[in-house]
Image (cartoon, rainbow, N blue to C red; front, top):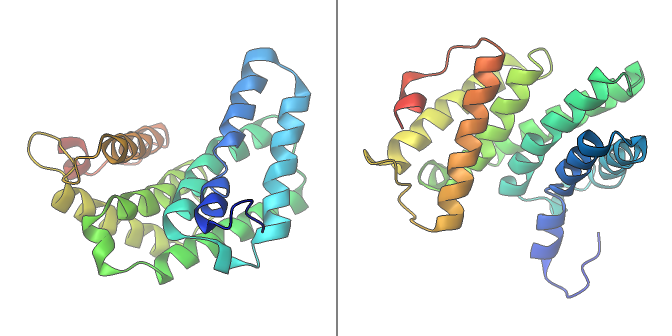
Length: 195
């Protein structure tokens, strides 16, 4: 909950937990269980220290965090590294975050990369773990995602903000939804494939 330079952006970015994917990749590359153990410890540390403190969250970072958690939780489950109690704690944390995203979504996000990064986190997690999130939140996220792409991405595939970083994030997150939904044998909306 502390920032070394007084800038809350530091906290927001740290709480995206993108470093968990680095640990996951290191685990896959080396097979060393200490990488997996650290990944798990940091995930639960976030839950313990942050779940009850949404004042230090931001919507964009929360959506990205859910996207990042998907592969991490999948790995821990596949390798039988989570007890039933730990699974329940993660599911509760995911639901708290998804509810936060829905409740704090504003109309301006329809035309912003923030909207895409909010909804794709929900959709990727929901595609991988179909019984965790309420169908109403998943349906809401899907409808918003389709609206976002319709408004933001032109016929040539350019996201209107034109920043290379934002274009890359929108593209990456959209591809993550397509991949997750295809893997789950969920029909990918035609507008998503077109855009």
